[in-house]
Image 1 (cartoon, rainbow, N blue to C red):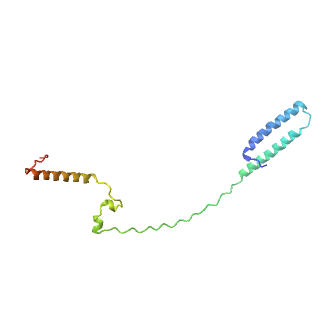
Image 2: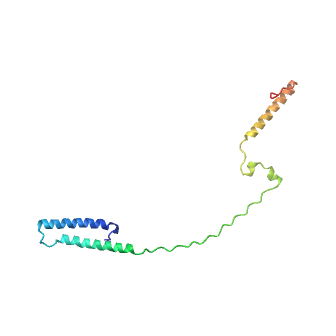
Length: 142
């Protein structure tokens, strides 16, 4: 079973605690002059293995890392721009309203057009009233 190298220090710590408990249990029940039990020997062998794995990991960390080769990118050719269409200079182009030149149909009446229509309607109404009455109408502004 592979050992996760990131957890070696925790494994060593836990192994040391279990080994200490096993040694204290043997000393308490059998005394100090008895040999180590199988459980203690297994824990000591595991501890040795963990320490060797830690040393191998540290030695590998000291080695230079393999770096990937740098990819040299070639410059792309610039895109060719499409030639612009020649502008119309004929009388027809000048006669077109600004909204049609932009490609939009005129959908609403502007404020200035409304004011001009209103003024024309008022002038027409004044002229009609003069014709019917025959008397000149005095202007309000003068």
